[in-house]
Amino acid sequence: GQSLEQPSEVTAVEGAIVQINCTYQTSGFYGLSWYQQHDGGAPTFLSYNALDGLEETGRFSSFLSRSDSYGYLLLQELQMKDSASYFCAVNRDDKIIFGKGTRLHILP
Amino acid sequence: DAEITQSPRHKITETGRQVTLACHQTWNHNNMFWYRQDLGHGLRLIHYSYGVQDTNKGEVSDGYSVSRSNTEDLPLTLESAASSQTSVYFCASSAGDLETQYFGPGTRLLVL
Image 1 (cartoon, each protein chain N blue to C red):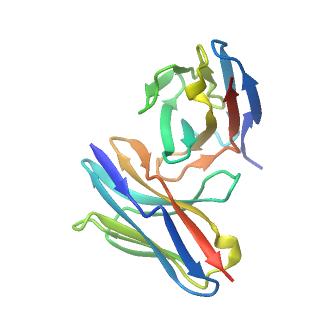
Image 2 (image 1 turned 180 degrees about the vertical axis):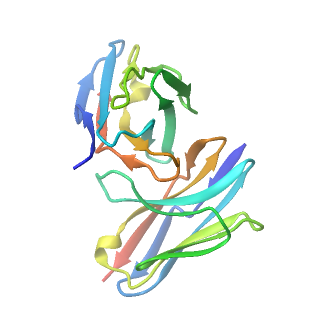
């Protein structure tokens, strides 16, 4: 089966760095994706890790360790507009399975 | 510009009624998906399609059906709406890779 675990909420300060973790238990694993969703909006794709290591896209980075069944999303230089929910997702058996999401609160 | 649209954006219906939610994409993507989103459950896959005439069940497919007669559209039908189907429904599409999905704006459905 598949199981994705991520914290339900994380709080950080504007300008700081925050890491959102995701652990997974799944067979037939192909890679880990991250999506952002603002309140009332649709999910938008952020990044995808098929291989171990760090992928950087501007202020956002995503990391994957297959041996540890673990990944994280790193957000740097936090801005108020980064307040949103962040979902990790895995490709299992050609279907994308989403975690329940992490709500990121940013304090001024 | 290419896009993915959903209609209606809001819908109120009664239990037992048949409801169809539309999803239309202009990217010419082969892959299309329907999800529902509820508090505490994240996004759950209802049905998906990898091409015309192809449809597959997701993890929460009971009470829902889809059909894919062309590349652009994947309508979702609730055969007999139930209050448990009150939710926000998102349609998504992707090209060759499944990991990069583009989501529509969502449909808020209330079943009374």
